[in-house]
Length: 464
Image (cartoon, rainbow, N blue to C red; front, side, top):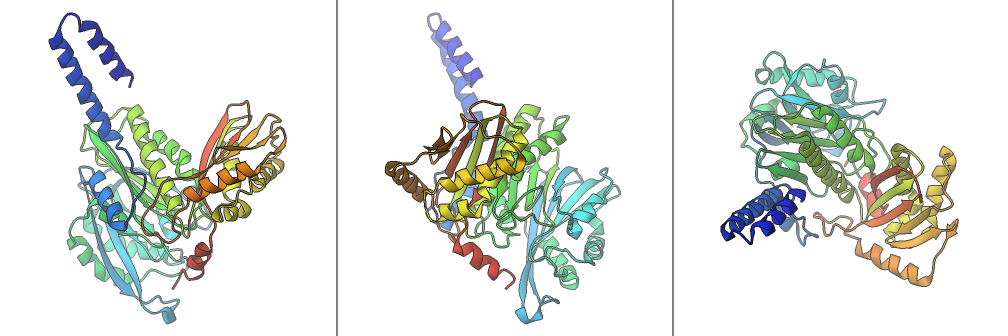
């Protein structure tokens, strides 16, 4: 924007002397604006059908970054631990760079992790990534999980030259063993399957997700494409979802720190149900087949793509009917504390259920904030305020409500509501809570979901 304005001023200054120069500068200005549009397409306000949503994803992100292909296959099996449930369906997906490439991952901190997490923690960190093998339906939290990974990767040893490794990802039921013989039998089908589009990749490994999640950022020198799954068991302490970030940029020095910061400020700021998963991760691969990117632009791209995916996880949460956004600003506390305060609000069952019913019961929000402050011995400033849906609800040390305020909040909650089982995003509205400390450097934003009957139904029947 600063460059655009500079060019505009230059054009005004030379206008008196040369119409030709003015024309050239205007063309340059239009060109710069066009490049910027590649990086920041205007998002839609919502969709009317799944077909329109998938069409948008395909047009917004038509291809993976240079140097990547993805393939997928499906098969059926009978879980050994629960044969009475009958046949279950599993998908195998392989994301593969054209040659082993640089990678980085953020892993769940759950103390009882699955085999994929144990495998990745056992790596030296010097290996290049030859691909990511993903399965859904079973999360591979099993005593023989590492043995299963070794068997599968042994069958795919032709893909891993010396100094490289495949990375495992699993999601689904915790406690079942992987159907290794069926998976091995499906590998030839996987390797011979046609390449996936980004939208097909995003759809290939879902579980209870209602629709695929895909985000991208493009520039003349390359692109960043991200896809993820996650609908329940969402309370990241990295990771609690499966997320794959692919780029062809030649990454700048220190890109690993930029990756870590983006994860902390986006995926670690969402919560659906407060439960941290066992086997999930965020994995980034860089083929290096594009041009160079500055650290500043890479950071912008990471925040944009990861932020879009993080919010999509909440909107696509199991049984979710509202997205709740909590912003803490000007608070005399650390940013980490501010994010924790926000999590206390979005994880409160009383707040969640009130929002689910479009009930402007703002005392529950104040109660959740006060409860967290009391536990953590953080003083809520006398000048502090709380707004819900743009309406001032707490100030001067107490809750201040009127019938008019109740009506406004009800209408705005209703306007942010969407179908709890709809298989496309009907809108991108949010129930916004702003907690203002009135003076301080602390800030943080978190996203959460309401709590509906549909969430209970989905999780009561999850394994079947």
